[in-house]
Every structure is written in C-alpha cells, then in structure tokens.
Image (tube, rainbow, N blue to C red; front, side, top):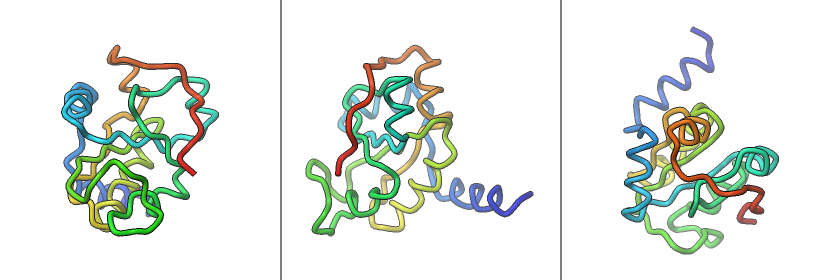
Length: 131
C-alpha cells in the first residue's frame, strides 16, 4: 500500500461515507453539499442542484464554523457532504473538515460521477466557486 493509499484509508476510517441516494435524501433534509471540483469539471459535467462550489484551496476558510471568512448558511452541526470527481480527494477534505469542528462532515462515495451515474438530478455547471 502506498503512502497516499494509507492516508486515504485513515481518512475514510473517520467518516461515515454516503452513497448517492443517501446524499440526495440528506440534501432534501438540509445537508450542505460542497463541490470541490475545479470549474472545468463542473462546466463539462454539471453540478448537483443546490450544491455550493468551493475550491479545495479555500475549503477550510469557508467552512470553519468559527472563522471570520466562513460562508453563511450552515452551523457546526449542519451535515456537510463533500463532492469531488470520484470520491478520493473528497474523503481527505471531509476528514479535514471534521478536524476543523464539523462533526457531521462526510463525502460522497464515487463522487459526482457516481451521482450522475445513479440518475440523480444534475444541472448545467460552471458556477464560480465561493471566493
């Protein structure tokens, strides 16, 4: 096992990851879906309706529940589902959010591509990320 595989396994051990259908139910119940994919991917493949695009380099600052740069619309107890292309970098990002003080942070198994393959709603993409 490579070092990154080990790091990924450790991160996932801290998460209760969700399948696309469960993520959709959570979204309907008020979970915040955060899309960390680059704008090129969002423009080419679409976005999950209601998701908030946040570039990975800004994630901790925008979702720090006590930070002065946090985006509005969530609390420390809001369920947060991080989405990437295929569910790898989102696991690392969700683990980091848990360490930041978001105990209900997790990620989407299989990422956006699993969501789309499951036939769940997709809207045209390319929304600029939260600055």
